[in-house]
Amino acid sequence: MKVLGIDTSSYANAVGIVDGNRVLADFAFEAKTDSLEKIVANIDFALKEANLLLEDIEGLGIGLGPGSWTGIRVGVALGKILAFSASKPVAGVPTLEALAYSAGNTPALLCPIISAGTKDIVYAAFYHTKNGVLTRVGEYYVGDVRGLSEIAKEPTVFIGSGVEQYSRLISRARGSPNIIAETIEDTPKGSTVALLAGTCLERGESDDALSLEPLYLKESTARAFLGEYTNSAKAKG
Amino acid sequence: MLILGIETSCDETSAALVMDGKRVLSNVIAAQLDLLRKFGGVVPEIAARRHTELIGYVIKEAIDSAGKTLADIEAVAVTSKQGLIGCLLVGVAAAKALSYSLRIPIIGVHHIEGHIFASLLSNPQLPLPHLCLTVSGGHTMLLYVQDYCQYKLLGSTLDDAAGEAFDKIAKFLGLGFPGGPMIDNLSKKGNRKAFNFPRPLLRANTLDFSFSGLKTSVINTFKDRIANKERLPLEDIAASFQEAVVEVLVSKTLRAASQHGISAISVTGGVSANRRLREVFADTCQRHGAEVFFPEPSLCTDNAAMIAAAGYARLRCGEVDDINLNVLPSAPLEMQHGS
Image (cartoon, rainbow over all chains, first blue to last red; front, side, top):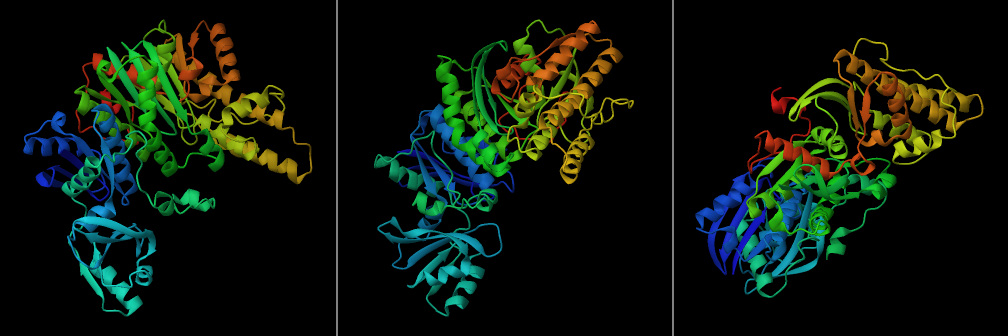
């Protein structure tokens, strides 16, 4: 199954195309603060590099975040309308899962970390991996990175951008050596998003395009101010 | 030519199908009134999240309710200039997806240009050139509409937009949101001459507007009355405030018309739905031998039909964007056309 994967949750347009497990194209274009301008041109570039037309694509994978709120909105709005107008099945992929996948098979617990934009506040999650299949353990985490030390009781591989600094904070909080810090991937790859989406789609687990929504994991401050902070992480469980 | 319009510049998620820039086949508008009431105004991040939730449904509904299919759409026009950046991004991302997958042209439209076409859609007989006063929660602009794609800004607000003043006064008086209709309704029962509120810049030799001084004066009157334990005639305050805004808007527009030798006037934007504004414009124009045109109510507030109509005009002017179209949250209307 040929799947186009798009992730705009970081400051890059990540675009990848896979056919089953085979990567046909995989690019990350720097987008700085602007996910929107070149996103379609970048998709078009990846398709041309893979000698494909949009018509040849059989499914879409969209990185849902967490990450830059503006970035994931661009990706999800584009992705849902592309799926609707080109009649392609679509699967949303949590960005944290795409990062965890990059660690490969390991008996250790995987903990991808994404900065939430504020000092030491992060989005994170824990995954077990077996035969390339990721299973999330517990809820998504939003909070001070040091708080992860209370959850990570077993040897843990931390993954993501800035993870070395984060690991120091975590190990200082815990005083435990069972930490493996790896900057395996700073940001999710388009091909990983495509591959994970393809796995879902092949199982017949597609998302409804029109109702696809970003995974913010954090309420906007206005809503939190009104006392409406709901643990969307749990809700999205 | 069938154009799909998309508008997400502020807090209305809208999509519309318009044929040949004239015939509105559908105009779906999802307003965020529940959120406005809850937060007392537009919160950009929350508005942007709602747009992302709704955009797909709104586009599908615009196509379905017009009895058309995706394959019938020949171009997509989207508000890409002027508005809240996070909100504009959602509409333009959706438009790009449609343009790319359907292989149709994409046209970025300035939000104010849309309001000019709201009036043209409702009034095909509206001549060119004409004067266009666009008044809403975000804008107060007096434009000389020379021709399609040729506009000249004659005046705009130096501080609050007229609709913003309505909203802020309504909020202050505890009338709720949106303020325009609240004050309009309350004013029906009030005395317009009870309070002599200032008419800022009315006699100044400029076509610019200012409403913050008026707003402050209303708020001070209210506070003084409370401090002195005087009666608080909310109806009279609302009616007198509204009268001050209306007088400034009408006088300046008529002055501009006379300066430019123009007798056709179009009034658009959310505030153009105001009952008293329409009344005074109609009376004054009649006395001055001018003619005034208003959009129908559904085209007064932000909507995608006007964006589709403006997009059609841009196409006819030979202007089309490419797939790298980006948003410009504060682009002036004139710059894009080099007029």
